[in-house]
Image (cartoon, rainbow, N blue to C red):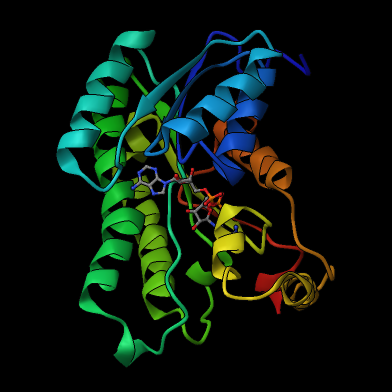
Length: 259
Ligand code: NAD
């Protein structure tokens, strides 16, 4: 184990079955937390459980769709019985959209992106805040994006959803600041995960490598980030080191947001 920074703490992470959520689950486990992983993919949660097994930490997997009110209610009912607390929550599950001009996005796709990326964060925050008010405080981190702060052609639904995540974060942060619930956002730049692979699914392998390099080159540091670099920021925001930080958006993007 790295340190016991989160020992005796229970952390709930959505989108824990892949990419940033999986790596953050592992990072919390390495610091002694009990991790509750929520994902719609049972296989993904199984892979995360296998990774965490080597740390000796406790990992509980809950299969749920964060964009479905009933599914979230059942998941949080179960989550509340695991240790009786949720000290930290990381609302990270999200999806991308197809590469489409604003006026050509289908209504169904628009609704799917909003349901998972925006309503999903709100539904989970609602449940977490209820629990945290009863237990006397806690910390919530939401996954925003470089695209919470900037635009990108052919990504209107995704960009709108990530701007909304930042609005949700800031507004809830001021409402619950006096109740000892800190609510912050992490805004990743380009990270090679399942989501990026999906965005490049139509490109052949050689083209994919070139596209990944081109995305990396958009960052002032001239590279993509890693899931671990996002996880470290989430651990900081969730920890006592960030005790006076709420309503903040921490960019972890190799300088991209500063352009
Ligand atoms: P990923 O696809 O590897 O992981 C996303 C996880 O969320 C998957 O395990 C998936 O099964 C889960 N998920 C999706 N919809 C769900 C739902 N309705 N209910 C429950 N689980 C669901 O992608 P990632 O890059 O790790 O994405 C994590 C977050 O990071 C997302 O919110 C994404 O928008 C954000 N983000 C990613 C990047 C990047 O470049 N990868 C950049 C900025 C922000």
